[in-house]
Length: 77
Image 1 (cartoon, rainbow, N blue to C red):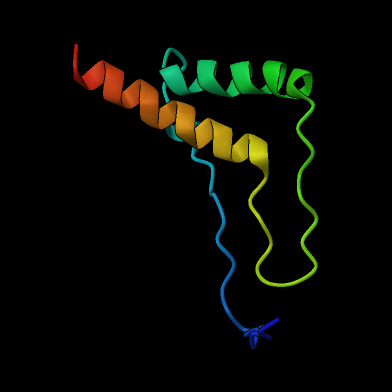
Image 2: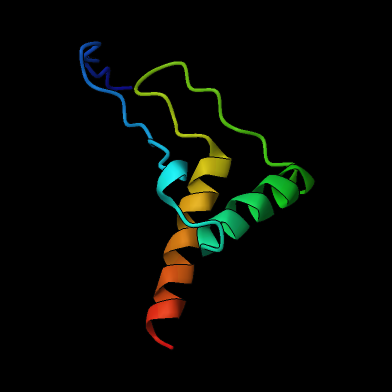
């Protein structure tokens, strides 16, 4: 096994929310509500890493993926 050096001063990757700038009828609100309702039903266990950078929460990643897909679908209409 190869040991990697871990830089503890490395910045974390984070998702900043801009809810206050999004109109109430925007698709993003539906996506967030959908993931919040459905994610617990999927019984996905988030990995607990002992080394390296912390993982992003799985539900946040699902939000990102659904938003990307919805934007692609909206653009192609």
